[in-house]
Length: 317
Picture 1 (cartoon, rainbow, N blue to C red):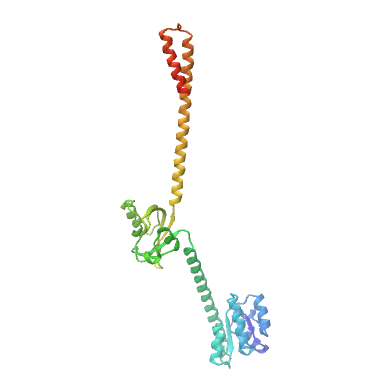
Picture 2: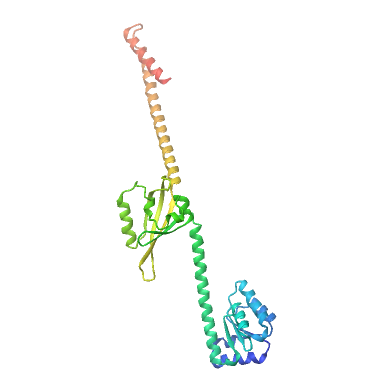
């Protein structure tokens, strides 16, 4: 903890109050006799709390606190004052001071209670800021996701869709809101799939499947759908969140690849058959020539063997 003030006796008085009330931070109390010294200390050391005396320079103290807030520092400040008017106190507290304590009411119990109260409020604000930042990050992630995100209430009415959903389906956010996912129904799937989906998610489980949906313009598309229930603090299902990845182009390319593989296999088969057939014709031609050497010339049998040989050669060519 840091005390900012130019009077040495105030430092020892406050430290004595803290020690008498058995405040653990009494031994960690440090003293800055000017705002310049306070600024240096705050820049290089972490403090859990800063006490400002009003006569240390109200306007300068306000600027110091404001500068630290702009830099993202979240040190809690307490103003110790006596003669400041309400407007000045409001300005000082508005700049980022967490609390204000009159010197005439300054005693050990009041000081320790104010310190504990201020630190507790500061911790709550840090938690709130952290939660808000997490929500902002989550919101940006959902808004910028390449997958379509849709949130419905417990009955299936659409409450939110992200830009990827709009691009994938052709339905704008205002068009989709209050509708149900039935606007995407293509009629290409059996009712059993949707019955299974509702049984699964109402039971509190995640449903995953590849569905054929229909865009606003009537075009069909394939989507890898994942639907999960969202529960409240009591464990009751309040919403459902759907995450969809467009598989249309991927499935089209896979179908083209499969067709190319089929044609390649047919080509190899035809080539093998042709090769085997050519081998058979070679055998027929060879044996025909051998047979011609064994029959009388100009005989009817020779003429028939000649026809066999010529037919085999024609097929080879």
